[in-house]
Length: 215
Image (cartoon, rainbow, N blue to C red):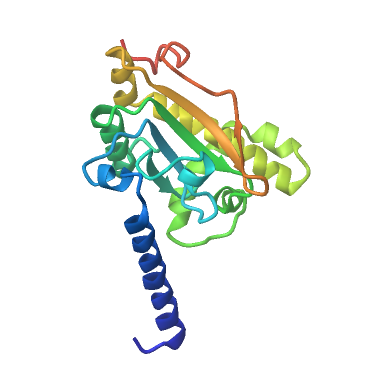
């Protein structure tokens, strides 16, 4: 590897792994041997790809307890086969009981969606967030402070993604089959680590509206 800085960074990754291997080897609880045999998490976490919001640490869970999907701005897009594949496996194979859509205050993706700048390929992804803005433009435009404007759109975006998730055939069929499954919308305050409940939980399709709720 030619670049010294890159080489040092790569060595740091390997050293970190060696430390982890030692930790696993010295653990006497038997949990890692159990994890090697399979997983049975109760939570599916759909969060932002931001490096500051790791799912396990935020909910105080250990390896094997949270199934995770992350993308820019925690989007649940109906045509996203990656998200749908994770959702299908989590709901129909792992039988998770809780799905958390977790945004975070200060999200760069949401902030970028409120600008008129071009950023590259991501612009096409940000259009999904702009659609959320379009639905709530009057409320967002009434907010004068830029950070408050972004944070309110972050909350509204989480609620829209929860709705999108609940309208998938995967989630609705789970409810139809009497599977215990709750979908929650939450936002993380990175500065405090607090996970704020938006009081946006669904356990059935009754509140989705007749066009969205399958029979």
